[in-house]
Length: 127
Length: 129
Image 1 (cartoon, rainbow over the protein chains, first blue to last red):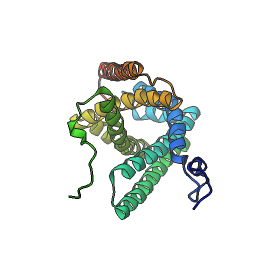
Image 2 (image 1 turned 90 degrees about the vertical axis):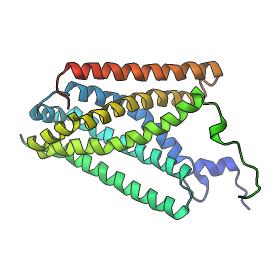
Image 3 (image 1 turned 135 degrees about the vertical axis):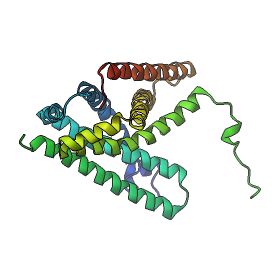
Image 4 (image 1 turned 45 degrees about the vertical axis):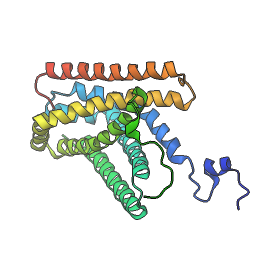
């Protein structure tokens, strides 16, 4: 029996120590993604018909490099939390749920790493 | 089958705007998640050089590529607008039934209009990336 109130436990003070973290992080990344994603879509629309050189030049601009990497981090983390929520809701077989979560998390992390390295390569490479 | 009581099945409810938008938020979220693969592929293609970038452009400009991009753009605008609606709910605002429906219809109209504006701009630019 625990003397802890339900509220204290759900605030993240229980044994798992992360009661509401994914709920909270989902909101934080959502708020970050409002300006970042709108900036990204506007940016993509501006280079929709651009040559390879112009596309590279756009990504090379320091503020674009920074915002692009920030977008990747916030977006991929938001995707990770969102898909995890869907898995938790719809998959009921415990080992399959765990396996799917692990595979998706690793795949998303790897994909994000590849995206960031690609941005850095474009940004730092001499033309 | 056990004899435990069942809650009414989802299928017997008349579809309502609120429930439709709720499941659409989730569906667009899952669909947009697949978009991170396309985004990463596009970044790799730009990083790898002009010829791979041209291949990626050709693929994204093909009919399946265009259909995916139209789907992702609508899903993005919907998920963005409805996500903002959710954030207002998170701080306890907009829960009155009238407001819930008004914001719901606003989300639908806004995402359709923004998708249409986006694609009329893109098509006016000639070839598509």
